[in-house]
Length: 212
Image 1 (tube, rainbow, N blue to C red):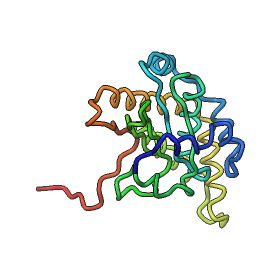
Image 2: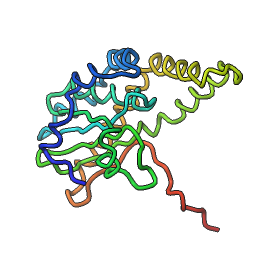
Image 3: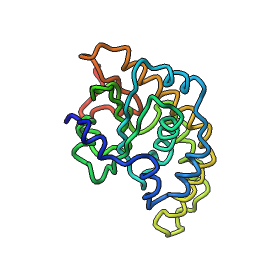
């Protein structure tokens, strides 16, 4: 499903999105403020031959969105060559899924980078692939801190994961933006007919099996 220019501008500006967040608003703002855009990313996007747009499909309840979305929005704020619009994934499920393989439908967040003609340059899905070991360490640390019989429906564990994400926002933001930049650079290097480049986490298709 193509994303038209008119549809893109129906999305919220980053400030509009942050104003209306209902879940995890303060942690989101804390992470946004903590992220420092790496100089190499700032220089790359400032040196683009033509501006790009990034459509952000996100959800305020999602942990990966809590880490990744503010980092990308912080990058857009630091660059005149990257314009962001934000969509509530739950209200744009069909459009979001059109940028995902079927076995990853409903994954969130999704970042779609577009050129001046609304041609797709890159897709960045969920979060940085190299961040996965850090996320696994977070889950392990929180599991060690949370008694299984607390009986609170998981709210204490969620709260601890949120606090962990905030505490690691600066470090994780560098990782996320480094991979996001690399994905966009790969897309720009491709002929238009071979785009988009894809970055972020990867899941194998459910029917994929090892041979031998």
